[in-house]
Image (tube, rainbow, N blue to C red):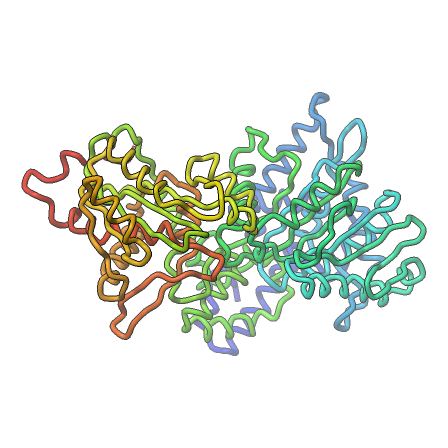
Length: 593
């Protein structure tokens, strides 16, 4: 059976088994999977095979391979600071294959696959021509679950603690929770206990693995554990950073490597549903680096980002290897049959898309927006073109000690809308936020204002609307009456027309669905304000028996105030989109730039 011409989802169980056997044989024949350790470093060979198309890979793995091959050419220039030292790239691979033993299963030894040769070879093989120190200080390894992440993490940790040539190397396995970090640590310890050669040289205690000959150690740390300053990191491997909502642990580890000559931090993870955390930032940085090679972006970070190119490829197992480079070593028949069953459930399908195929998605079938939809709404409007334009205002007053938001919504001549949003937060609330660096970035962009004291004085909101009214024609300001009576009175006294928006399925269901339709069409412009993206990412839906929608938070810490202000405004703005006055508001509409 030629697997390239047959989709196994269309076969019965026996046909699927036959297809899987043929697929594995083809992968063995083309060298994409190995049954025994390779006699040489395969980094360059893997890169060439991916670029020429003999190994199926997604856009970003292809670009990573192109980057490697281009760097090899540039290294011939004496002025280029880096060179590829195959001996150094091969050394940790030999260590893992010869010295480390699997702690589970019936395997006698570990076999690193060509894609792992590419990753490890890059991380350890690229060095400075003058000093010989490693080029890459950080590495992002992004791939589907069950591709041997834990084994690779553990093997690298054991190598770095004793055989990287560093005196007193402090090595850490890191996770968002201490429980997850302990799982990684226990695997590194079990690997040592399974290998007589390693067990003679390491002291694998319950809380710390030591390598006395070099005074090295391996320890498990997490975001839950305090007092992490001063760790003097030589090697850190972060597991599943898709769970991280902030940079606290990451920044502590980065700052602790200052005295090391060639520290290495590795992030190994699948995709997740937190769309505003560090992982999404790293993915965007990686795409920028690989897409704009000539700009030398993030020259000291290595990226291997394996995923489907499109969620539609989930229905073609021939493409699954893009997110799962170890696919040929998996129980493929079971995977295919499980997928055929699970894809009938929206929740189960979303979990497959996220965890097995490595595409960011929310596993809740009532999620409001996906990363793909959000990316469609990337158009910008020149604010100068809006001078004098008609708009609808909206505001959401949460507790005075928390986020408060206001917005203006402008109808546009393509049937879309532009949203201009502003938020406020009191200093006391900012100081206890889990991710103050993010708020500071929003502040630097003018998207949020940190108010002195313990609460938000609503006069800031009043003053903002007064300033905006000098530039634009605010026809009406809509609001949730909860906690808003005083501000509403002051707005009325200032001459604004205001209107209550009752917070319920009947009032908000239609506008909510219309906003979703606009987002799906890429017709919500907000000049890519980062805080507004955050608000959109934080929404999940509540649904009544008539399929009406209401917005809700993904969790207590994830705010939606800016979206709530937008939704209140849209209750009236939707009429301007479908029922323009004679002569139309189109004379004040503006086009996307």
